[in-house]
Each structure stands twice: as structure tokens, then as C-alpha cells.
Length: 178
Picture 1 (tube, rainbow, N blue to C red):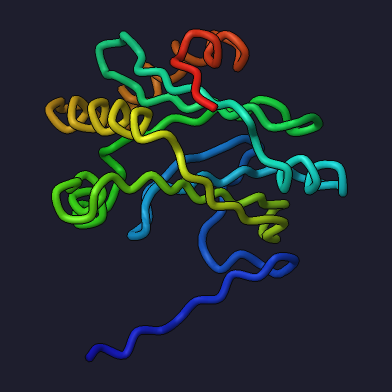
Picture 2 (spheres, rainbow, N blue to C red):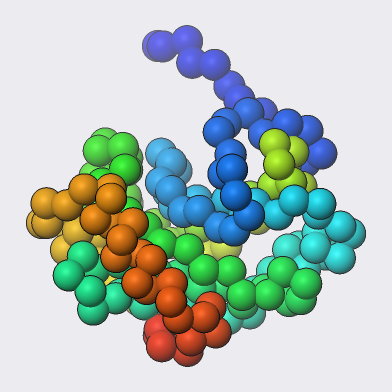
């Protein structure tokens, strides 16, 4: 048995992993599944309450761009409001990705982990179960991305084009789930 080090995540303490440098949301993939980091500088009690209350609606959009972008938009209560984030399969850890896509072994992994950050400080955590149909759509986009050869720069350029739309437009263009 390997001697693995356990990492503790505690609200109000420094987050023990790299954090986004800019405000907004970033999506990644951990061994347990997809994660969303919401970076908001100067988190107030109202922000923490909105995060804790969570979202009632979210949407999933696969862009029709040459590189299909997996775009999630989550509608939190104000003052957080709409949070949108994209997924790029090219930066995902190969073994974790294979495990996440392997629905034959454990079924569809529909958990999504959220972390509210204020700089390096963890202000909140949340785990939600997404609709399995939304996850199936997400898996489809991931598989399309896997078939393409593109650079991070090309992905970013495609993303800039997509972000010309407002979060509300992205939300309403996507398939809405509750």
C-alpha cells in the first residue's frame, strides 16, 4: 500500500492548490471529477450566502466553433449571479479523464465540485449532482475535442470569440437544466 499524503481543505484557510489569478470561474478535472474554481476578490457575507444557496438553473452549450467548446453557465443568486466556464480537454490529466469518461465501470459521474476563493483563501465548497443528460452532452463535447489537434492558443482564440456573448446570452443559448 502506498503512503499517500492527505490534503485538507478548510473554509477560511489557504487553499492548498494553485488558484486562478483573475476573477471569474475556471473549470478543471481532478481525480474525483470536474471542478469549478470561482475566484472573487473581497468576498463578502452576501457572496458566501449566495454561493451556499447555490444555483437552481444551469445551462450547457457546445459551441459550433471549429474547436467545440464545452461551456457551462450557472445561475447563482445575486451578488454572484451568472458564472460561466469552459472546459479544455487538452489540459486534463489523461488517467483522470479516461476514468471520468468510462461510464461502463461506475456509471455517469455527475458530481461537480465548486470552490469559492478569495485570492488564496477558501471561502466555500459545494458539491452538486448535475443532470445525467447534461453530463452525456459534456462527454460528447470532450470526445470531439479529443479527436482534434489544436494548441492552447487556438483554444483561447476560440474562447475569446465565444465570450463576445454575455453570460446571459450564453446561458439562454445553451440547454437549460434545473
